[in-house]
Length: 254
Image 1: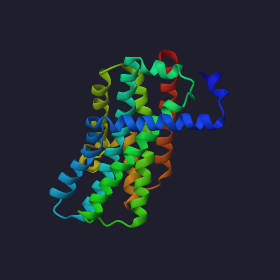
Image 2 (image 1 turned 135 degrees about the vertical axis):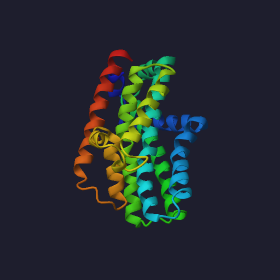
Image 3 (image 1 turned 180 degrees about the horizontal axis):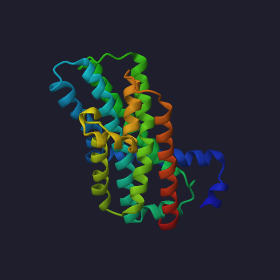
Image 4 (image 1 turned 60 degrees about the vertical axis):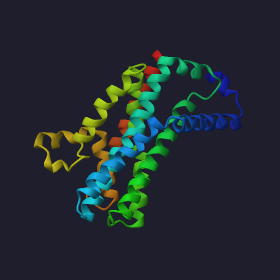
């Protein structure tokens, strides 16, 4: 496959990447039962806890906007990569794609672009609720920064989902990913502040990528979370590390 794609004109290579991204978008749109829960779940949480039970506390709504946006953008990466890869490995579709004369990275880039798009939609809907209904005190710059954090923050979870997808085939991935997704969100303080949790759980929180994403999201909406660079570097290292491990497994096992 590499030899064939090496001989492709640059325009055809770019077209292959765009076509793969288009196919991922169409796949999501044709499966609303998979896409809608990913988009609506964090918004329902925000409505229940940020609006209904919040009694008009705009500062609390701003805090919940950041934490639930972090919770929301985890899912497109974990499930969009993990579940679809496991199913495509089990059905033989991945083996077929790898035999096609297309750039080796087109498969991953297509899924990654789709995850970024879905994460951006999740973040935009939460931001609209926070500003339009909860009247959270946010500036325009803070809103834009949060959307950027949401869009790029999905990438570490794409890497983690990709790795899980290399471990299992078929229907085993959703259960395993839920065992990762929900406890990680809880232990990172995405459902309620870490200071309300036992001390030993607070000390363990920094091992989770969701903790660092939440710190960046809270910083984006105006909370003082200290220096941002360490959180960015942890997320970058997590992304690169799991992508490397998953790519090695894919080359060995397909």
